[in-house]
Length: 78
Image (cartoon, rainbow, N blue to C red; front, side, top):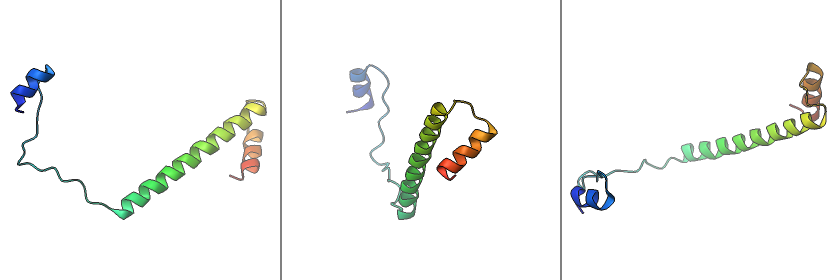
């Protein structure tokens, strides 16, 4: 289909890529992939710890004081 045909079907201007312009995917990088996986694990761990700290705060007075920070550090060994 041409741009005009697509525009008529879609009801708005449609830009189609020129077939002579090939879009090449980025080359596979094991290092980048492993870094992304590691980052995802670290982010999940951080969210889990934050949830646990929030729950601990809710069940132990819901006020963050110096004493509470020390107890949290001891409890979670942060």
